[in-house]
Length: 365
Image 1 (tube, one colour):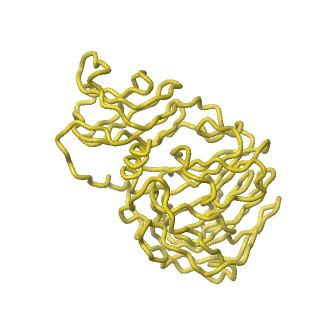
Image 2: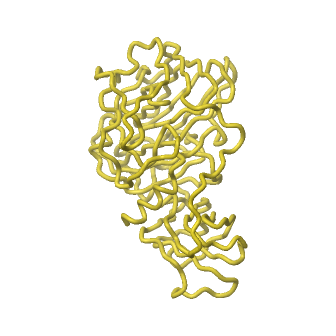
Image 3: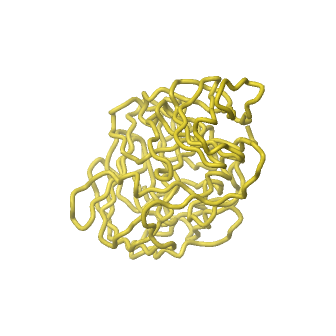
């Protein structure tokens, strides 16, 4: 759904008045999207640490992208993308945070996850012996996967809801000695299209979940949706239409998700990117509109061909699910005429400011 707007694309990071240096291409529609990011931030304040897309920055206004809408697959004009950041070889190192000696819990990411998911609890003073730390949600102990002095990775084992508690010790840890988060974490059943377990840490994407109008006929303006009701995390975007009922963070219909992170391209080439969505979705790379698959209705696929230089590209994908419609969201690629396949989790990185976001959301809770 192409709409004509001003040429301005504001910087994604809160308080930084910069614009993307990505080369937008020969596409006549590129750049015609007014106020893609407003200057009003989310509840969680702060800035990211070098990533193009900030999890703590302003919410995007949903504007049309470059694709052609309709039930059939469509290929647009070839777009050339030049990155603002070099590609990443292997895994990205964890952002170093100031160390503190005291035992404290600062926040948790995500705030809602399916059973079987990995969650991250941020803080300080955690014992590096995994047997000497315990994490609880609603009083139920989680399996500890990894521990560093400022982070615990734990696996959700049962449907539960409540504050996250962390205790130190190898024996029984009474409630009076546990450190609690202020916000609430919700563990859901893995029974919805977007209620799928998060199986990797350090890869995948962040998703901010919003309540959306039930009668929305297109991707809504996310600035009008208020604060996010939950933070979720996904390994990838490979949710076949109709494979599972719509659902995320306890909501079955009428929600929007702003997926954020980056796409890591290690080899230059011509990539066909395809976005399948029901209801609608818009894809941006380094603030450049790439695919428009907007509009209510059954899931359909829209494809665009891009020549992409190696680099790490900030990714924003705006998705909405209306009422009583088929859920589905898939992002696939094919390089240089090869076979099309879902973009793997290893090609996605979450935003680098997850710690700041988790802390801010916990303080707001």
